Image (cartoon, rainbow, N blue to C red; front, top):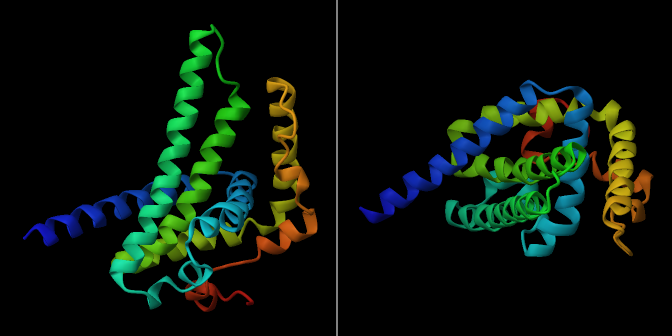
Length: 202
């Protein structure tokens, strides 16, 4: 019985994530979607895979057992939640100092959160197969934003520069250290589970 309750709770978390991401992408500009995609691909390379989630899980989630997928989903969920807690703490500390977190920083934090959730949804397609069509739609929206990637990357770099100026950060560069052409190549990655259905090249 407890196993059934746990599974229902796991499904509910995945359902909500897919629903929120899909709704968001349906209502965003192509440039904003490209920003989320660009961040998602850096997060995949530098954070998610670094946390022990294999690339093949993100590429072919339907080939893995539910137990494995739930484990990997939990890893990514923890990364997302930690980021949310960090930005909330930053906002609170700034308010205590009588200032507000700049809108550009808050927008970047939300795009980063969505970038992580893209992969949570991808893995979630294997946890809740009845939501696979919605995850495919998410990747359809992302793939249609490819033409805006260069502009999105430029904006991300501008935000990084603004953040460094605002905080006086030293050695705080992250995105500016990434070769732009390599970044664009990273963004061409679409999970193999959806490439054929989206009629994209591999």
